[in-house]
Length: 83
View (cartoon, rainbow, N blue to C red):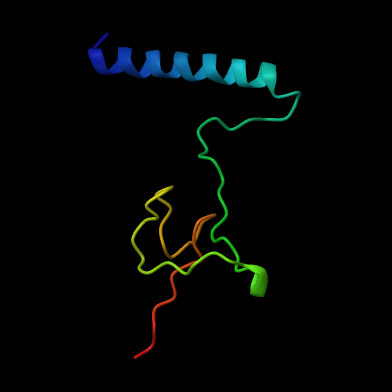
């Protein structure tokens, strides 16, 4: 058997092991272990009670590295000024 076929079989075996572990601890609900964590698309503006400053640019937040266009717990989403 060539090396690529062995690698494919080994990867499939490992995936099946991970799936069986995930099924054991999922309480009967399927758990997709290949899916990334879901995150909110944007932290909403909480109105006048929101004391977070607006992001100065679309660069990531220096505290948590969330994109400035999304906003985070530290800053409101970046809003480009219309010229």
